[in-house]
Length: 352
Image 1: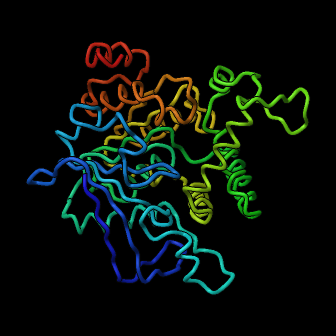
Image 2: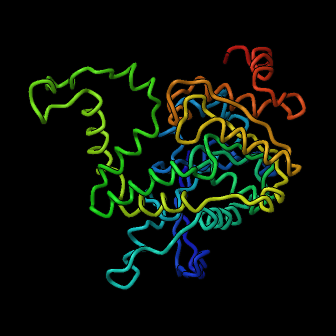
Image 3: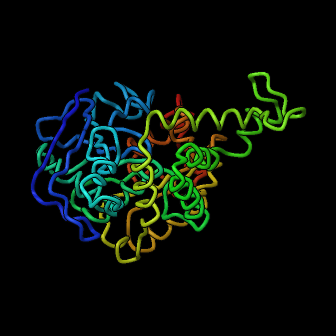
């Protein structure tokens, strides 16, 4: 694993019309590029992730893992607007007139910055682009905008946001306007979990620190203590301006029929059975839209009670699906999920 800090000083025009005169990117590379540089896989991190894939996909990437570093080189770039080494939303805001907001940054802008870095690395085409949540949106945006630069697109738990998703992001940004990043994070965490997971983990138990919600107004149930802890810890590791910028970029992501028709890569769309933020039915419906427009697309499903977070927390299930997508040719996989599960047992028995 090694990191790259790359700066390009030429004017970079955002989709909004704003122009940045300098963009810094932090990238991390795992594994080794082959001589032809044809074994590279571009990984897009989720909303609050960094370019260090091993920090948030620990157990998925190693020699022999589903993301196999003995075969592929994995490259991840911290987003423009994020706060882990690249030009952050805070730094963008400081360059503006006092009191102005940071410029509007879209997922298309973020993808374009990645392409600039690829020129620097000398990579002509990716074996695949992959990501989950907003990372999955970016993988799809990459396949739409740069159809000749990847053989495959793997998008996990990602579609254009539904009205419910837009509503939740709106509430989070309203909290941010009140300088309450903790509340924004707590709203997000609720949307990332499934009701069954919360019931199994917390139920109606009092907070584990000894509080008794039955006798004092301010005492919490265990789930309340958990959410408060998540909010407090988050402020220590993430910038409020970056959260604001990236959630807005998520809101703006959409796919027209014409854009879908431009895709030439094989597309694997992965739903999560218990995800209510990006429901599996919505992911499956998006897969059908790709197929209807002549794209070689297939639907897969992570079976997990972990909700939207399953692509990060349920390593066994995520490994099973990723291993199958990367190992099995498209014409060997049925689009019928239940037939797909039967085949999985034959192909990767140790992961079922």
